[in-house]
Image 1 (spheres, rainbow, N blue to C red):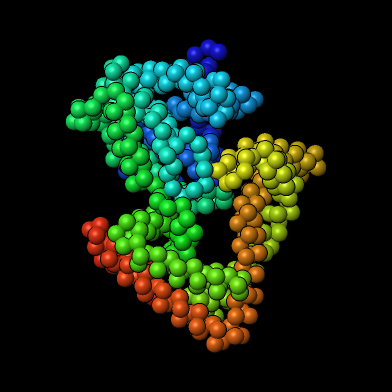
Image 2 (cartoon, rainbow, N blue to C red; image 1 turned 60 degrees about the vertical axis):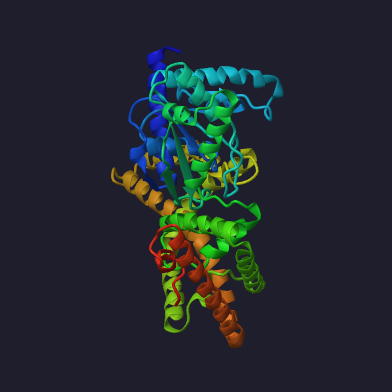
Length: 460
């Protein structure tokens, strides 16, 4: 392929991909973006929770072309492979994919080094796989190897920058993303300061990359404690989705802190939370159910607000679902058949399948309007109304389904007044203990003592 054509195709593919991701995730917040140099060699290394969406999010965050390493089998997929090559992506050959091809990894490393020597940016996911866990898995040595070799071959000024990709609900359309850019590692001065060479230098740099990556990611040291994060978030009230991502990070850091300095106390709180969750789940509720968070006029107002919202949105939601029922069903059916298990690739495959399906559906609707000789203003009106109601319906129906079920279960609990009072009291007592721990943690990390308590654990 001609170089100018490849460049143009890459630029076009990159622009389309970033636009689509911004539609799926309309709120992408980046903190620390000024730490990413606009020019010069840089290795961007991030956690990997969301398959092929992650490289696009990093590209959006840094605002410059980035050549990523991706597992080799993806390059063999028709159309997708061509797009990946046009974007300058580099195949990585893993033993888990094909043990016979592992030796070709040296070629991939050399290509990455040459990209850096020329002053460009390379993106790597050092965990080597995409996963659903709220933690950083073992960081492999690829980043350090490439960095050391690049310095040896003249990549002056090379920096390694950790990037934390924190999704609110990665599989949900319209959700939010928080990209936290960590402090860069200036590789050459760092190696000189350490005074290490060879394998020792690579091992030391790998450990530093892992440490800094954990500092920008929602990371829980012990996997068994991951469900507790949801319980703690259930104590949060009145916080926007994007704020909840920040708060999730703070809570995870606090959990790690107490596990390291006062494990018995942390385990006692965890046991109490598990008991409370079990008692609530028996009733079909969660720890964030409104009937446990509030009472009196506030609870009545919440229920009335739910009902008004559901009724007000019913008509546009019906219009949206009727018009989009066929493309929606086809998209879900096809994406479920091709996507791997877990949630790591849900959003990517929905986008991949949905783009041609929805485009064909809208084109068909337009042709139908033309064939019926509709007035000139009908087609744009149809598209605007269809698009608006379709986007609205995607969030309305899951919300409506959950709300109706929760309303009925909470109403039934209100009829058992003594049981309801006890559950509220238990939750308030637990909230008080968590508030005290939050204040203690805030003091240890030089924050305002009431920061976490004010944001998340405030009593009714």
